[in-house]
Amino acid sequence: MGFTETVALGAIAGFTIYIGLPLGRIKRVDDRLRVALAMFSVGILAFIFVDVMQHALSIVHDALATRGLMRLLFVAQAAAAQTSFADLRAEVTCALERV
Image: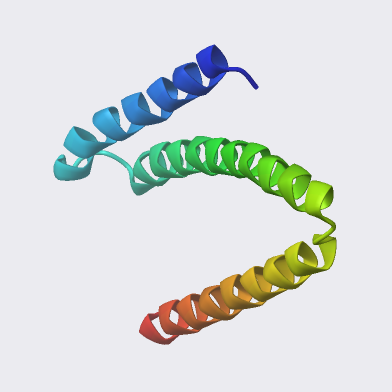
């Protein structure tokens, strides 16, 4: 994905957040619409994040491959994944306890 597409998706996500802010204050707006706008913008932002991280990791991958340190990259990715899943599990547990 090029720079123009990234900027366009960021603008769409920002626009949905911008529209969602006043709608959050209006009592007559359905909760489903509020959640739909929020989830739409979060989905686009998550997609942009994944795309940017993919390009960043490819740079790191190429740099480590030229130096023969691919095992280090695997260990770092495994540690990052384990940490992410542990944080996600804790957040979900806290959210479910509040309900």
